[in-house]
Length: 506
Ligand code: ME8
Image (cartoon, rainbow, N blue to C red; front, side):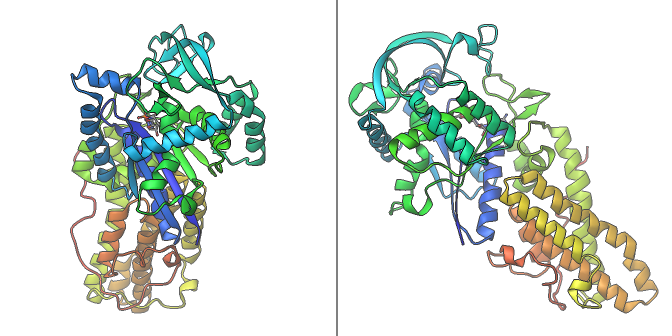
């Protein structure tokens, strides 16, 4: 048994959540559930980033204090986690007083180490990114990510000696070639480091909405530094006991490419300075795009995941996003695509497989699963079942969520072909009892195996399949050691039920 500490970014509360936030949280949940299936000690963290310029501005625009605004918005972000059926172990808010104290103590360590000095910052700032820019970084004078003009800033700030960590960072990358995945993101971050790192401002003099710098309370901590520290901070107060030694370092920080530099460069340097172990992996998934453009609050082309989830459930939503988009790459999503994949794969392939199997076992064998005609290993499906198990396992270990689903779906399709090949209705008619028994056992066992393999992706579906197989759903029946071919006991009684995925009329 190992440990697995997985995090999502903590989301800005300047605006309501959209499908991109739901995607990251759902993906992190798949990994958390998979590691629980393996028997690992899991901690899954998500939360909200509530300080900084853009949250303060959003509050002002609504005529609220930042506190009132954040208190309202956080409800919606907690709802996202709930709606996608995420099993996060904690939800951190950067306005938690324990977090504020933790940030101050963390920063004091960096200061005491001599890695912070005072200087005047003159330059450009994009408040949508909450990031500093140089002229060279802009595209036609605009923020490359938001297409908005940055503002000129000049103030006395505290700076972190990021430049002093350049060599150590590069060495860490070289010694840990899977520190950042996928590979092209690793290359991107490493080449950024190798181009040379400048020191960064880590405080703001004019902003009030933030955590006071511990040695100079006239300034607040730069929102990104405040936010990154959430990862260890949460472990220190999520429970009555301090969980740091149990879970630190993170097994995986999950995010999209917009915040790679903060997590791949600034964060490890801060951790080195404060004397922490570095995260084991950063996995950078791609952007979900609507009509080819990145979905972003600033761009105003957001897609609200709630209506889809409310109408069809969390499982189809999780399934669609993780199947449609190759994990680690950008991909286009939309309601039409959702409906066609739902009908083709969930209603026709998986849902039908279950209802056909249950109804045939009911009709031909009084609902009791008959015995196979020989040892389970001799089944014509045994090798393909083993392949699906191996692909799902290897892919999930490797954060390849779409790859795992692809491996599982190959087996769903194999089972459907098996029905056609064997044509149990013909076997029944011809009185081929042994062969029919064998067909029915194989199908029921195939479904049981699918319930185990799909648990992390579609937990309610997995539970519903087990219920139809009269297998008590619960942590033991979906443990990864149940992902083996041949475990279904003959005599198991199947339950008829409504279709798992009623077709959507398009
Ligand atoms: O960056 N496709 O918060 P944020 C896929 N507070 N994922 C998307 C997405 C899209 N179109 N849009 C957003 C912040 N995301 C900081 C993080 S962490 C210490 C501080 C997801 O609300 C994706 O995970 O802008 C992305 O990295 C994150 O939301 C950015 O969320």
